[in-house]
Structures are given as C-alpha cells and as structure tokens.
Amino acid sequence: MRLDILNHGYRPGTKVLFTLIRVFSGQPLPDAAKLVFYRPDFYGDRAKRFTHEAMRGPSAWSVADRELMAAFVSKVNECAFCVGAHTATAGRADQDAARVRAVLADVESAPIQDGLRATLRMLAKLTRQGTVSVEDMRDVLAAGVTPRQVEDALAVCAAFNITNRLADAFGFEQLSPAGYEAGAKYLLRRGYR
Figure (cartoon, one colour):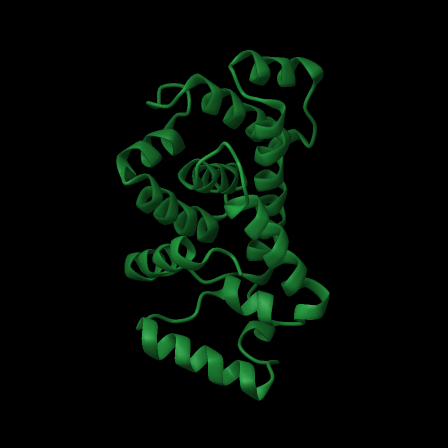
C-alpha cells in the first residue's frame, strides 16, 4: 500500500527543491529521496549519514562491490525498487552490468572473487535468518576477507535491510530504466548525502 505522505507533507522549500531536481534531471524524484526529506530530524539525516558512510566511506571494498552488496541484499529481501536502483548503480560503478546480473542470478557461478562470494553468502543468511554463526564468519575470513571488510559489509547489509523494509512499507514506485540510470549517476557522483 502506497502511503500518501510521500506525495505531500513537505515544507515549501523542500517542494521547490524537488521541482528543481525533476526539471534538471528530467526524471521524477525517487521515493527513496522523498523519504529522507520527510521528517529529516527523525530519520532522514541519520539515515543519509549512516548509508553514505557504509557505501562511500573508507573501505577495502570498492564502491562497485558495496553497490553489488546493496543490490544482492535487496534481491534477498525481494525489494524491487532497491534491486533496480542498486543493480543500475553497481553496473555503472563496475562498468560490467553483465557481472552484476550474473551475481544476482546465481552467486555460486558468478565471475567474482571467493572473498566477495563468501561475504555475499553470509549477508544472504543474515538477511534471511537474522543471524549468522561463528562458522559462517570463519568461512568468510578463510576466503581472505579481513575483519574490517566484514564490518563494512555488515554496515551495507544493515543499511539496506532497513531501506528495503521502508521501501516496501511505503510502496516505493518503480522507476523506468532511464530513471534508475539517472539515479545511478547521481549516487556515483554525490553518494548518499
């Protein structure tokens, strides 16, 4: 069920900003952006800071890897909006959309490094079951992933488990392929601020 609050409930200055974004991008403003502007003091400002740090902060994982993690967690959660948004962003960041599609189709046969594969397996289990075991973490570390990389991947997972649930609860509207590509360009240029 789409909540009407995403269409209304903004201050006049925010409405003007939305109009400017729509005019200059040629695309409608995604609901994800609208959500962070609704009650920014309660959710939006904190969510933007946390997500930006998880996705663009210092990490041994590349931006493409973290965007792929976001798309992968979103696929596990069956969140169509976030799958579309982060598949486009990961493909653009990686400059290999086919690799991104391969991971989302079957992580086991996808052409990725073992460390990333082990990390994605762990994120899938955590997303589905809400828990992972010591053995799961040993498998990730044995694949060459550092403890810091595990922490960084868990931050991406946390950000997108929250975002996926909000996207579904608020009924985020799907974008056109051009809309997802415009969003991907923005996210790669400006991040999540």
